[in-house]
Length: 285
Image (cartoon, rainbow, N blue to C red):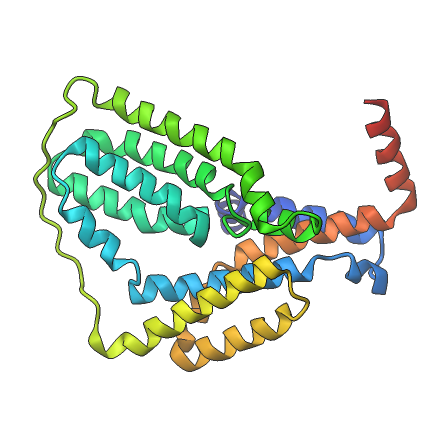
């Protein structure tokens, strides 16, 4: 019982999506049309991205970003670097992964310099930056992958153009937040020691593999190719060859959560009575 309660508290969205999927299967029994209504391409793209990004973390491909952070000595400049590091990387490696990269770095830097009081406000702004930065590109978040995959009349340039005003305004607000945070002393100096593991020369091949795979995933998402399944097989085969332990680190919970929501939406779309009810409700509003 305790384990069940703990699981629900730890994975609330997964539990909700499982209940929704179960309700959907009751509403509409599985059929060929039902399975066809599930967006398998978005799920495949998401799984590929998660696998490749686990490789990024394993090989510390973004190590140059960490090295650059060492050179900054102003609290204001360092905070801007960390926050906008999240903002811009979230556009390409998804918002969750950008936080996984920068939040530990933020904590390590601030703690080593005795600036613990700034950790919470800076991390809070990094969370905002992750959400607002990821909205600019089709591959910034699973939601964007789904929206871009459905809106075939919108190309990559149009998608970014529609989202750019929101992203730009968010960037301005983030700068203002940092100015307010350090308003008493914009020139406050930070002196820290941060020694991390450098790249291993014998892992160059693995780093090259993950960079190539990342480019492939981006290409698959942007082009909306129907051969996404072939790319998924290629990515899985390459990772299996390079480092099969990566598969044990992937966030499958996120993939299953989206699968459950797709099952529910497919069941609603496949039920004529519910679809008609929802259509009437929207029309009345």
